[in-house]
Figure 1 (spheres, each protein chain N blue to C red):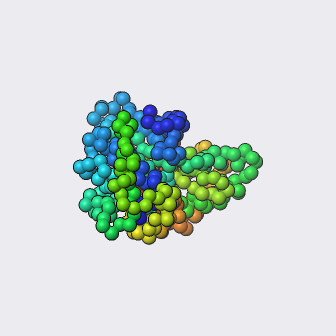
Figure 2 (figure 1 turned 90 degrees about the vertical axis):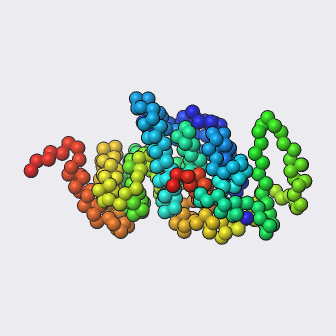
Figure 3 (figure 1 turned 60 degrees about the vertical axis):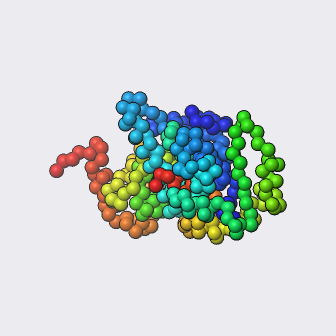
Length: 224
Length: 130
Protein backbone atom coordinates (compact mmCIF):
# COMPACT_ATOMS: atom_id res chain seq x y z
CA UNK A 1 0.00 0.00 0.00
CA UNK A 2 1.27 3.47 -0.90
CA UNK A 3 2.81 5.74 1.75
CA UNK A 4 -0.11 8.11 2.05
CA UNK A 5 -1.39 9.48 5.33
CA UNK A 6 -5.05 8.85 6.06
CA UNK A 7 -4.92 5.99 3.66
CA UNK A 8 -8.00 3.92 3.04
CA UNK A 9 -8.75 1.38 0.40
CA UNK A 10 -11.56 2.61 -1.79
CA UNK A 11 -11.88 -0.32 -4.10
CA UNK A 12 -9.98 -3.15 -5.60
CA UNK A 13 -10.45 -3.56 -9.30
CA UNK A 14 -8.98 -6.15 -11.58
CA UNK A 15 -6.26 -3.80 -12.73
CA UNK A 16 -5.47 -1.80 -9.64
CA UNK A 17 -6.20 -0.95 -6.02
CA UNK A 18 -7.54 2.52 -5.43
CA UNK A 19 -6.70 4.31 -2.20
CA UNK A 20 -7.71 7.66 -0.81
CA UNK A 21 -5.46 9.82 1.32
CA UNK A 22 -3.57 13.10 1.48
CA UNK A 23 -0.72 13.86 -0.85
CA UNK A 24 1.38 16.87 0.07
CA UNK A 25 -1.59 18.33 1.90
CA UNK A 26 -4.21 17.65 -0.75
CA UNK A 27 -6.96 15.10 -0.93
CA UNK A 28 -5.74 12.56 -3.45
CA UNK A 29 -6.35 9.17 -4.94
CA UNK A 30 -3.53 6.66 -5.31
CA UNK A 31 -3.98 4.04 -8.00
CA UNK A 32 -1.66 1.14 -7.42
CA UNK A 33 -1.37 -1.50 -10.10
CA UNK A 34 -1.78 -4.98 -8.71
CA UNK A 35 1.07 -7.25 -9.78
CA UNK A 36 -0.25 -10.31 -11.52
CA UNK A 37 1.79 -13.14 -10.12
CA UNK A 38 0.83 -15.55 -12.84
CA UNK A 39 2.74 -13.47 -15.33
CA UNK A 40 6.44 -13.83 -15.94
CA UNK A 41 8.12 -11.16 -13.76
CA UNK A 42 9.91 -9.44 -16.62
CA UNK A 43 6.70 -9.24 -18.61
CA UNK A 44 4.75 -8.12 -15.54
CA UNK A 45 7.17 -5.28 -14.86
CA UNK A 46 7.12 -4.07 -18.45
CA UNK A 47 3.36 -4.35 -18.83
CA UNK A 48 2.63 -2.65 -15.55
CA UNK A 49 4.92 0.22 -16.36
CA UNK A 50 3.52 0.61 -19.85
CA UNK A 51 -0.06 0.70 -18.59
CA UNK A 52 0.86 3.24 -15.92
CA UNK A 53 2.63 5.39 -18.48
CA UNK A 54 -0.28 5.12 -20.91
CA UNK A 55 -2.70 6.21 -18.26
CA UNK A 56 -0.55 9.18 -17.29
CA UNK A 57 -0.12 10.17 -20.92
CA UNK A 58 -3.86 9.93 -21.59
CA UNK A 59 -4.63 12.10 -18.57
CA UNK A 60 -2.19 14.73 -19.81
CA UNK A 61 -3.69 14.67 -23.29
CA UNK A 62 -7.14 15.13 -21.81
CA UNK A 63 -6.00 18.10 -19.79
CA UNK A 64 -4.36 19.79 -22.78
CA UNK A 65 -7.47 19.23 -24.86
CA UNK A 66 -9.77 20.55 -22.18
CA UNK A 67 -11.39 17.18 -21.54
CA UNK A 68 -12.25 16.93 -17.85
CA UNK A 69 -10.20 14.27 -16.11
CA UNK A 70 -8.33 14.16 -12.80
CA UNK A 71 -5.07 16.04 -12.42
CA UNK A 72 -1.97 13.86 -12.12
CA UNK A 73 0.08 14.79 -9.07
CA UNK A 74 2.86 12.20 -9.23
CA UNK A 75 3.73 8.98 -11.02
CA UNK A 76 5.85 6.43 -9.20
CA UNK A 77 7.39 4.12 -11.77
CA UNK A 78 8.92 1.93 -9.09
CA UNK A 79 5.62 0.77 -7.67
CA UNK A 80 3.60 1.72 -10.76
CA UNK A 81 1.33 3.93 -8.75
CA UNK A 82 -0.37 7.09 -9.99
CA UNK A 83 -1.32 9.81 -7.54
CA UNK A 84 -4.29 11.79 -8.77
CA UNK A 85 -6.67 14.51 -7.82
CA UNK A 86 -9.54 13.28 -5.67
CA UNK A 87 -12.76 14.72 -7.00
CA UNK A 88 -14.46 15.47 -3.71
CA UNK A 89 -18.10 14.53 -3.40
CA UNK A 90 -18.28 13.13 -6.91
CA UNK A 91 -21.03 10.72 -7.87
CA UNK A 92 -20.58 8.11 -10.55
CA UNK A 93 -23.04 8.45 -13.41
CA UNK A 94 -24.05 4.89 -12.69
CA UNK A 95 -25.12 5.73 -9.16
CA UNK A 96 -26.79 8.93 -10.30
CA UNK A 97 -28.91 7.13 -12.86
CA UNK A 98 -29.87 4.57 -10.27
CA UNK A 99 -30.95 7.16 -7.74
CA UNK A 100 -32.91 9.10 -10.32
CA UNK A 101 -34.75 5.95 -11.28
CA UNK A 102 -35.37 5.00 -7.68
CA UNK A 103 -36.90 8.41 -7.11
CA UNK A 104 -39.43 7.43 -9.72
CA UNK A 105 -38.33 9.98 -12.30
CA UNK A 106 -38.41 8.60 -15.75
CA UNK A 107 -35.74 8.64 -18.37
CA UNK A 108 -36.73 12.02 -19.79
CA UNK A 109 -35.06 13.76 -16.87
CA UNK A 110 -31.87 11.96 -17.85
CA UNK A 111 -31.88 13.21 -21.43
CA UNK A 112 -29.78 16.32 -20.66
CA UNK A 113 -27.20 13.95 -19.17
CA UNK A 114 -27.24 12.03 -22.44
CA UNK A 115 -26.57 15.25 -24.31
CA UNK A 116 -23.68 16.21 -22.08
CA UNK A 117 -22.21 12.74 -22.42
CA UNK A 118 -22.54 12.81 -26.18
CA UNK A 119 -20.77 16.15 -26.37
CA UNK A 120 -17.99 15.02 -24.04
CA UNK A 121 -17.30 11.79 -25.89
CA UNK A 122 -17.34 13.63 -29.19
CA UNK A 123 -14.57 15.88 -27.94
CA UNK A 124 -12.65 12.89 -26.58
CA UNK A 125 -12.79 11.03 -29.86
CA UNK A 126 -12.02 14.11 -31.90
CA UNK A 127 -8.72 14.16 -30.01
CA UNK A 128 -8.25 10.58 -31.21
CA UNK A 129 -8.31 9.40 -27.63
CA UNK A 130 -9.98 6.08 -26.96
CA UNK A 131 -10.99 5.58 -23.34
CA UNK A 132 -11.04 1.83 -23.57
CA UNK A 133 -13.32 1.16 -20.63
CA UNK A 134 -16.32 3.42 -21.00
CA UNK A 135 -18.76 2.44 -18.33
CA UNK A 136 -21.11 4.56 -16.25
CA UNK A 137 -18.91 3.80 -13.26
CA UNK A 138 -16.00 5.49 -15.00
CA UNK A 139 -17.75 8.79 -15.56
CA UNK A 140 -18.19 11.04 -12.55
CA UNK A 141 -20.43 13.99 -11.79
CA UNK A 142 -18.91 16.80 -9.77
CA UNK A 143 -21.18 18.21 -7.07
CA UNK A 144 -23.70 19.72 -7.39
CA UNK A 145 -25.00 16.93 -9.57
CA UNK A 146 -27.61 19.10 -11.30
CA UNK A 147 -24.89 21.01 -13.08
CA UNK A 148 -24.02 17.85 -15.02
CA UNK A 149 -20.31 18.65 -14.70
CA UNK A 150 -18.78 15.42 -16.00
CA UNK A 151 -15.31 14.01 -15.33
CA UNK A 152 -13.83 10.97 -17.04
CA UNK A 153 -11.74 8.60 -14.97
CA UNK A 154 -9.85 5.33 -15.26
CA UNK A 155 -7.76 5.63 -18.39
CA UNK A 156 -5.87 2.43 -17.68
CA UNK A 157 -6.97 0.83 -20.93
CA UNK A 158 -6.84 3.94 -23.04
CA UNK A 159 -4.85 4.46 -26.22
CA UNK A 160 -4.51 6.86 -29.11
CA UNK A 161 -6.30 6.02 -32.35
CA UNK A 162 -8.00 7.80 -35.17
CA UNK A 163 -9.74 4.69 -36.43
CA UNK A 164 -13.55 4.88 -36.52
CA UNK A 165 -13.56 1.20 -35.56
CA UNK A 166 -11.88 1.92 -32.22
CA UNK A 167 -14.16 4.85 -31.51
CA UNK A 168 -17.17 2.78 -32.47
CA UNK A 169 -16.14 0.04 -30.07
CA UNK A 170 -15.62 2.62 -27.33
CA UNK A 171 -19.22 3.78 -27.80
CA UNK A 172 -20.47 0.21 -28.12
CA UNK A 173 -19.05 -0.72 -24.71
CA UNK A 174 -20.90 2.21 -23.18
CA UNK A 175 -24.09 1.29 -24.98
CA UNK A 176 -23.92 -2.21 -23.59
CA UNK A 177 -23.54 -0.76 -20.12
CA UNK A 178 -26.61 1.41 -20.58
CA UNK A 179 -28.68 -1.45 -21.91
CA UNK A 180 -27.62 -4.08 -19.43
CA UNK A 181 -27.00 -2.17 -16.21
CA UNK A 182 -29.57 0.58 -16.50
CA UNK A 183 -33.13 -0.36 -17.35
CA UNK A 184 -35.11 1.63 -19.89
CA UNK A 185 -32.38 4.06 -20.79
CA UNK A 186 -32.46 3.52 -24.54
CA UNK A 187 -33.65 7.06 -25.11
CA UNK A 188 -30.80 8.43 -23.04
CA UNK A 189 -28.24 6.64 -25.15
CA UNK A 190 -30.03 7.71 -28.32
CA UNK A 191 -29.77 11.31 -27.20
CA UNK A 192 -26.11 10.71 -26.44
CA UNK A 193 -25.48 9.45 -29.96
CA UNK A 194 -27.41 12.28 -31.54
CA UNK A 195 -25.39 14.89 -29.68
CA UNK A 196 -22.21 12.95 -30.42
CA UNK A 197 -22.98 12.99 -34.13
CA UNK A 198 -23.78 16.68 -34.02
CA UNK A 199 -20.70 17.67 -32.01
CA UNK A 200 -18.01 15.48 -33.50
CA UNK A 201 -16.54 16.42 -36.84
CA UNK A 202 -15.58 12.86 -37.64
CA UNK A 203 -18.69 11.14 -36.36
CA UNK A 204 -20.10 9.77 -39.63
CA UNK A 205 -17.72 6.82 -40.07
CA UNK A 206 -17.78 6.21 -36.32
CA UNK A 207 -21.55 5.77 -36.16
CA UNK A 208 -21.35 3.52 -39.19
CA UNK A 209 -18.77 1.37 -37.48
CA UNK A 210 -20.90 1.32 -34.34
CA UNK A 211 -23.75 -0.17 -36.35
CA UNK A 212 -21.38 -2.76 -37.74
CA UNK A 213 -20.00 -3.62 -34.32
CA UNK A 214 -23.52 -4.00 -32.98
CA UNK A 215 -24.21 -6.53 -35.67
CA UNK A 216 -20.99 -8.36 -34.92
CA UNK A 217 -21.30 -8.36 -31.15
CA UNK A 218 -21.56 -11.35 -28.90
CA UNK A 219 -24.45 -13.78 -29.18
CA UNK A 220 -25.38 -12.57 -32.59
CA UNK A 221 -26.28 -15.13 -35.13
CA UNK A 222 -24.09 -14.49 -38.11
CA UNK A 223 -26.45 -16.09 -40.55
CA UNK A 224 -26.35 -15.07 -44.16
CA UNK B 1 7.16 34.99 -10.54
CA UNK B 2 6.60 31.63 -12.19
CA UNK B 3 5.33 29.96 -9.05
CA UNK B 4 1.56 30.09 -8.56
CA UNK B 5 1.29 28.10 -5.38
CA UNK B 6 3.55 26.36 -2.85
CA UNK B 7 2.01 23.06 -3.93
CA UNK B 8 3.78 23.47 -7.27
CA UNK B 9 7.10 23.52 -5.45
CA UNK B 10 6.11 20.65 -3.18
CA UNK B 11 5.35 18.47 -6.18
CA UNK B 12 8.69 19.31 -7.78
CA UNK B 13 10.55 18.63 -4.55
CA UNK B 14 8.69 15.39 -3.90
CA UNK B 15 9.61 14.06 -7.31
CA UNK B 16 13.21 15.17 -6.86
CA UNK B 17 13.56 13.40 -3.52
CA UNK B 18 11.90 10.28 -4.93
CA UNK B 19 14.26 10.09 -7.89
CA UNK B 20 17.23 10.90 -5.69
CA UNK B 21 16.36 8.01 -3.40
CA UNK B 22 16.29 5.55 -6.30
CA UNK B 23 19.32 7.10 -7.94
CA UNK B 24 17.44 8.14 -11.07
CA UNK B 25 17.69 11.92 -11.04
CA UNK B 26 18.09 13.59 -14.39
CA UNK B 27 20.34 16.34 -13.08
CA UNK B 28 23.38 16.19 -10.87
CA UNK B 29 22.19 17.66 -7.60
CA UNK B 30 18.98 17.50 -5.61
CA UNK B 31 18.33 21.21 -5.90
CA UNK B 32 18.88 21.45 -9.62
CA UNK B 33 16.52 18.50 -9.86
CA UNK B 34 13.83 20.51 -8.07
CA UNK B 35 14.32 23.36 -10.53
CA UNK B 36 14.29 20.93 -13.45
CA UNK B 37 11.05 19.37 -12.21
CA UNK B 38 9.34 22.74 -12.29
CA UNK B 39 9.89 22.94 -16.01
CA UNK B 40 7.24 21.67 -18.45
CA UNK B 41 9.87 20.21 -20.76
CA UNK B 42 12.86 17.94 -20.51
CA UNK B 43 15.53 20.49 -21.35
CA UNK B 44 17.73 20.99 -18.30
CA UNK B 45 19.51 24.18 -19.30
CA UNK B 46 16.21 25.77 -20.30
CA UNK B 47 14.75 24.87 -16.92
CA UNK B 48 17.66 26.36 -15.05
CA UNK B 49 17.41 29.52 -17.07
CA UNK B 50 13.69 29.93 -16.57
CA UNK B 51 13.29 28.74 -13.00
CA UNK B 52 16.68 29.32 -11.49
CA UNK B 53 17.71 32.60 -9.96
CA UNK B 54 19.03 35.25 -12.30
CA UNK B 55 20.40 38.73 -11.76
CA UNK B 56 17.22 40.41 -12.90
CA UNK B 57 15.01 38.67 -10.34
CA UNK B 58 13.42 40.80 -7.68
CA UNK B 59 11.97 37.96 -5.68
CA UNK B 60 13.30 34.56 -4.72
CA UNK B 61 11.62 31.53 -3.30
CA UNK B 62 13.97 29.47 -1.19
CA UNK B 63 13.40 25.76 -0.96
CA UNK B 64 15.04 23.62 1.67
CA UNK B 65 14.96 19.87 1.63
CA UNK B 66 15.68 18.58 5.07
CA UNK B 67 16.51 15.20 6.46
CA UNK B 68 14.41 14.81 9.61
CA UNK B 69 17.48 13.50 11.40
CA UNK B 70 19.59 16.53 10.60
CA UNK B 71 17.95 19.76 11.70
CA UNK B 72 18.72 22.89 9.74
CA UNK B 73 19.21 26.40 11.02
CA UNK B 74 16.68 28.56 9.17
CA UNK B 75 18.15 31.80 10.51
CA UNK B 76 21.47 30.95 8.91
CA UNK B 77 19.86 30.56 5.52
CA UNK B 78 17.69 33.64 5.79
CA UNK B 79 20.63 35.81 6.86
CA UNK B 80 22.31 35.08 3.53
CA UNK B 81 19.55 36.85 1.65
CA UNK B 82 19.61 40.62 1.37
CA UNK B 83 15.99 41.48 1.30
CA UNK B 84 12.66 41.45 2.99
CA UNK B 85 11.14 38.15 3.98
CA UNK B 86 7.53 37.96 2.97
CA UNK B 87 4.79 35.52 3.94
CA UNK B 88 3.95 32.70 1.51
CA UNK B 89 0.40 33.99 1.53
CA UNK B 90 1.60 36.85 -0.61
CA UNK B 91 2.90 34.49 -3.29
CA UNK B 92 -0.10 34.95 -5.61
CA UNK B 93 0.64 38.68 -5.76
CA UNK B 94 4.10 37.98 -7.04
CA UNK B 95 2.95 35.62 -9.77
CA UNK B 96 3.11 36.78 -13.35
CA UNK B 97 0.14 34.85 -14.71
CA UNK B 98 0.67 35.66 -18.36
CA UNK B 99 4.29 34.60 -18.13
CA UNK B 100 3.27 31.37 -16.48
CA UNK B 101 0.68 30.61 -19.15
CA UNK B 102 3.31 31.16 -21.80
CA UNK B 103 6.01 29.06 -20.17
CA UNK B 104 3.68 26.15 -19.55
CA UNK B 105 1.83 26.64 -22.85
CA UNK B 106 -1.58 26.50 -21.24
CA UNK B 107 -4.34 26.05 -23.83
CA UNK B 108 -7.58 28.04 -23.64
CA UNK B 109 -9.64 24.83 -23.33
CA UNK B 110 -7.66 23.85 -20.26
CA UNK B 111 -8.61 26.92 -18.35
CA UNK B 112 -12.21 25.74 -18.37
CA UNK B 113 -11.60 22.41 -16.70
CA UNK B 114 -9.29 23.37 -13.88
CA UNK B 115 -7.03 25.90 -12.27
CA UNK B 116 -3.70 27.09 -13.57
CA UNK B 117 -2.09 25.10 -10.80
CA UNK B 118 -3.87 21.94 -12.01
CA UNK B 119 -2.46 22.34 -15.50
CA UNK B 120 1.02 23.07 -14.24
CA UNK B 121 1.18 20.17 -11.80
CA UNK B 122 -0.18 17.76 -14.41
CA UNK B 123 2.56 18.72 -16.82
CA UNK B 124 5.23 18.49 -14.16
CA UNK B 125 4.06 15.04 -13.11
CA UNK B 126 3.77 13.55 -16.58
CA UNK B 127 6.46 15.20 -18.65
CA UNK B 128 8.74 12.20 -18.47
CA UNK B 129 6.19 9.85 -19.96
CA UNK B 130 6.00 11.69 -23.25
